Figure 1: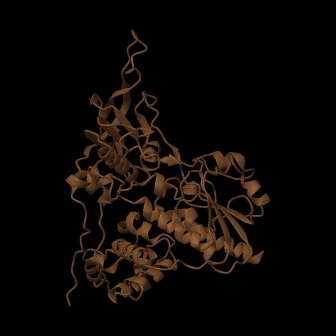
Figure 2 (figure 1 turned 90 degrees about the vertical axis):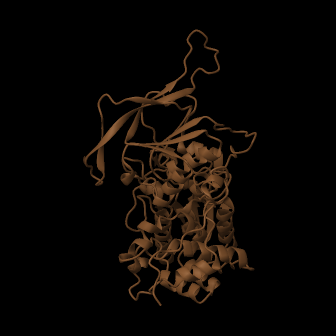
Figure 3 (figure 1 turned 180 degrees about the horizontal axis):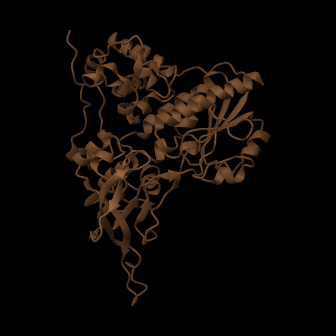
Length: 469
């Protein structure tokens, strides 16, 4: 039987409908579509797709189970190496990882590995009747700082080996960036909560509203009997451009903008912590977080939303799928442009004027691409005399984040690099004995699956360390 050259399309909400609600955009494969897509897998003997997965999911094996319609069997294969399959199936950049290694992709489109992973995880969540059983305790205690993808992965892998794991989360809801950073229309909160509940069933304790470095220090965790600590605190410190006007009312970091919407319910009709209602919004940046912020602004009622990015469409770092979805929904991409000043209203004759200090526009300059920089991307160069003003009243800065210095500043002997990332060796061990780290706290902002890979590496290293101890 001839193999279909293209992967099966993902069913989605219509753009004109989804642009006005927070329901999930991608609807997921049906059983029929999933089985047909699984049939495209060549089941290669050398399994190159596995080498492209940071957590080494046995991809051809779980796809083989889908072909047999043994969906629970497929889930159990994924679960051997991944603690967050329903999350990964939705937000991982499979096109640059496992699918980029797919043999079928040499002449055709690769197998829709991520879409099949999501199907399997969703089937399990809808049909599994029993929770996993907690393994027998091995008597060791490990603390995990942060409940994002690296922390949850580390906790899950250790719990499966019998460790008593306690996860400490600074916010009021577990999930880290999965819940405060990724919008509901891309990753429903119920999906993250289900994954967390699975870890709790394995015996993982999750304590929220605990800020390590304030509520407790890492040294105090050791005093409480924890024998090793994993730091997966993420990169929650937003970067700004350093241009005039960034302190005006109506200017947000993408972190604040998305956290207010995702966890503080700014989308309610009468929000306690409003962001904006209506108006025109400019989002500065071109990554996945910028796409999330722009599409969130649209759903919050913005009249017009711009993406302002200093390079061209070819250099946009966001996933192709997210860019396409944003364009379909009507986001206005102002490419090869860069902000130089955020403008605000100022009435010196009446300092009590309520409009004083609010954003009224953003001055930009046109850019052209020069020679490649150290990362291989063509360097943007300002075009002299090309300044112009965009009429906006809300600006969201989405140009990256850095690790929060709190843990570094309250932990003696913990070495960091010039960007504030915790320095680790090849095993994930920091400069402090029995303190490990991974994910964005080490690398700065990166992908969910790379953070999971770091959590998995650290869990293996902690297990080896405590076993030898």
